[in-house]
Amino acid sequence: MFLSRRLVPLAWANLVANIGIVVTGGAVRLTGSGLGCPTWPKCTEESYTTHGALGVHGVIEFGNRLLTYVLLAIAVAFVVAAWQRGGRVRTLGLVVLAGIPAQAVVGGITVLTDLNPWIVAFHLLVSMAMVGVCVWILDELVGPARAGASAAAGRLARATFVVGWLVLWLGTVVTGSGPHSGDLDSRRTGLDPEIVSHVHGFSVWLLVLLTGALFLTARKHGARALARFAGVLLAVELAQGLLGYVQFFTDLPEILVGLHMLGAALVAAGLARVVVTTHPR
Image 1 (spheres, helix red, strand yellow):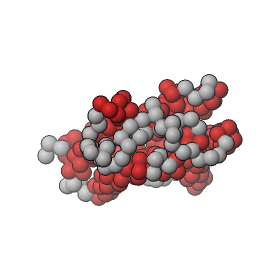
Image 2 (cartoon, helix red, strand yellow; image 1 turned 90 degrees about the vertical axis):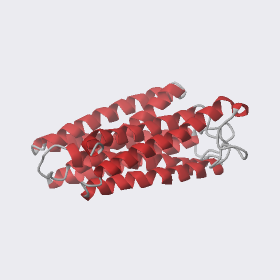
Image 3 (tube, rainbow, N blue to C red; image 1 turned 180 degrees about the horizontal axis):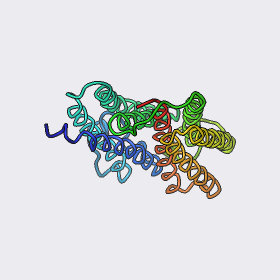
């Protein structure tokens, strides 16, 4: 079958598309276009599409909505390609497929609640979780052969995963407390942005320490694949930390915040990668 022979490229496309929607969603927020289409599922009360009266913000927000259909097409193609294979790959493909319309609904709720920062945070974190599922799919298809990780490495990987997700969540709280909330009139969390940023920073350093310990432990026990992926994750975390400090001390320029969101999606992918690599294959 045509699609079944392209299962791996479609799996990569799933991952790239789900990381891409995180970045484009960030662009919506950073340009103040979160309410460019002021209602949902229509763009306005009269039209499903944007129009000139909504200006560039309407174009940006409506364009991001259209990207949902790109993700949906890729996810459908992957499920069709994986159908005869069955097993975990097909199940995970169905999870990604089901997550896309669910995300569209959550996105609609964010608009209908005028960009409630806690719902916006949930919307982003679900996308991060879908990135993780896409990484799991790729491991099932093309992951390296390996023995199971040692008990110590397994515990460190799980701790890294939990703290990593705490870091991602705190990042959404920082954004929801600061100036880039998606619209000039949208509500913020009410928390002090500077204090939340410091708490986020402390959690990042804890994550770096845990990932470094995981890297060293995996090397000590000869788990080469796990050590390699932990090393890559550590490098991404350090780059993210540096970028976070630069953007903090330069008053959060939009381009740096956008790059930071891309880095967050890569961290989510890396967290999933190290956890699945602790299991034998």
